[in-house]
Length: 93
Image (cartoon, rainbow, N blue to C red):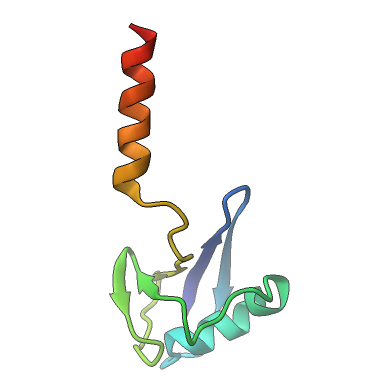
């Protein structure tokens, strides 16, 4: 079956399409993709994963056409970032 595996850093994104055996799990597909070797900072014990934006466990089965996503930890509070943007926009006026 054909699946995609995605991972993004702040400055680059990778989206790989690959063939995995029927009955593969999310973890098996990620390992098969080679992303763990390419990005040694990925820690599947700590980082969350999902399929099409919905959180799933590593042992979840994948279906043909699924997009598996490996999520990075948030490094900035989204509310703080939004507030800073709003403050910057106010200064431009």
